[in-house]
Length: 356
Image (cartoon, rainbow, N blue to C red; front, top):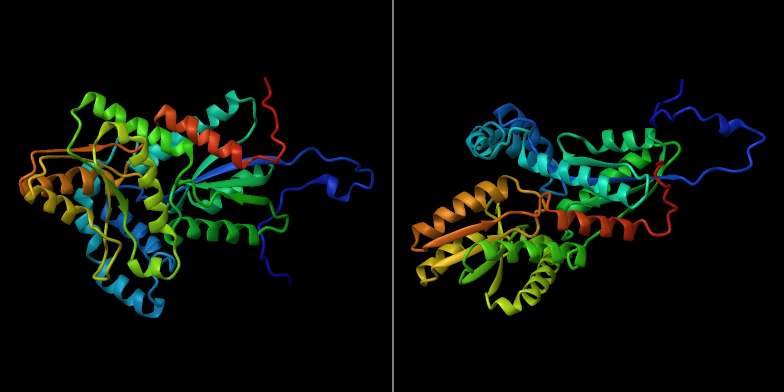
């Protein structure tokens, strides 16, 4: 008789209590969101992941009626098989590096917030794949969280990353009869809680290894068209680069920026990472270190594309020493910075104290 448009809400006896006079402060929950990963390094799971990821119109802005023919007829039947050995080469005992390190960040953030004396559940979700955002948001709601803060694990805003996570958050809220209050952080590309751990990780790496002739900051690329259409992503990458360059000025290592992971024939943000490294090698640059500031957890794009493919390209064209500086992953300084970012954004919400 009635359409079921909304999630079923938990039973709350106070809703029909004529004697109700006060309510406790709404409980706050935090959700960290990363892009996603196949569940296993198999063609089937890679295909399922790519089908969801590449069907998002925030990611591929081609009209679906045309794009789905290309995706399902020319990409999904072939691309997953080619990716199997790449995923197998980076897979950890606990699963995908992206999932393992992102989950570690959520767990360690939970512990850090608890040491501050607050009872704030922290959960990890993936925009594509598992754990799915709507499932994790439902879990937080069932825990009694009426205020939810979302932090996308992308320091630099882009419509194809942060915006699509916000879209999914809003879709969940739209399905609730009793909607939670929500917040999200759009960008933290210059926040000291992010920049300082990033710079410290580079300096620590240099303390253990000889400083290179050049440091390359490689960001995930996006089509140039998206930026000329109003996406602030390029600007945010340049702001991060400027902050890192300034912090490392005393080390006298030139800092450059480039963009990786280009897909398709369209022009993307330039300069491209691999061609840049090849050109440097041909010009006589002997040693290069590469770090990927846009990735907070190591994944296929960092461990395989940069650490393996780009290393081979640089050495093949005459370079002598190439090193990849890992993502922040579960770095204690990053967890501290992450906690600072989260607590600053929870300002004004009454946080419940932990039960001791």
